[in-house]
Length: 62
Image 1 (spheres, rainbow, N blue to C red):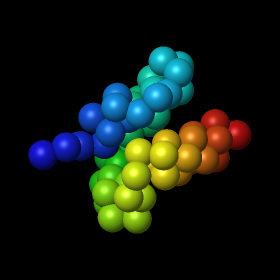
Image 2: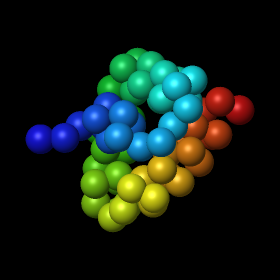
Image 3: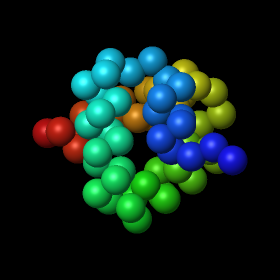
Image 4: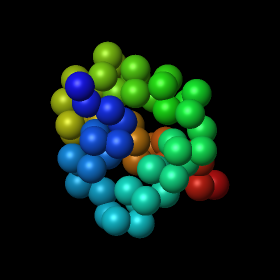
C-alpha cells in the first residue's frame, strides 16, 4: 500500500520542496490523511498530483 510520503518521493519535486512537504505531513497528521485521500481519489495522474501538491506547498509556505 502506498502512502503520501511515497507519492511525494515518486513525483519530481526539488529536494527542498519534498522536505518541506514531508515535514509538514509529519507534523500535521490529520491533514496528511485528508490530502492522501484527495491525491488518490481526485488526482488520477502523477501530473495532477504534482500540480495539486505544488499548489498546496505554495499555500502552506505563504
